[in-house]
Length: 152
Image (cartoon, rainbow, N blue to C red):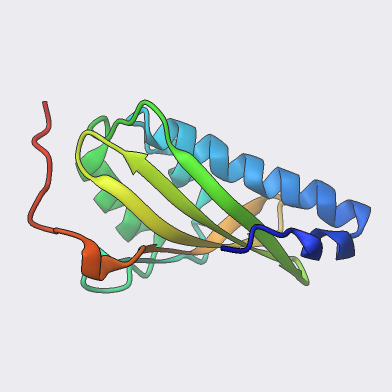
């Protein structure tokens, strides 16, 4: 497994600062997420232009409104004492940044092992928001999808 971050040598100072900012936004949303609070992602995901793909969902979600309906069903229910945010990498384009990372968490509902892709775009108000999010299972052929933990 390569953990080399040589690509960061090519960052400008502005890109280094932006990468830290993007990673900070994502980790803040995750901190809230694993405390049962969905507002971190509700606020981070673009209301104007958003799509979401999750290995647990049969179809792509095509709007902020639709993903919020899903978030309503899990508000206050998902909890984890800790999570591992592994191998984050930010790649840049014009007013866009692609964050990829691995996410591991033993939650009260499922053991999460995801490859996460978050496409950030700088919106008209100057804020960076996610316009596309993909959470795909790491090695799904090894997962037992019939084992969902009971919510206490």
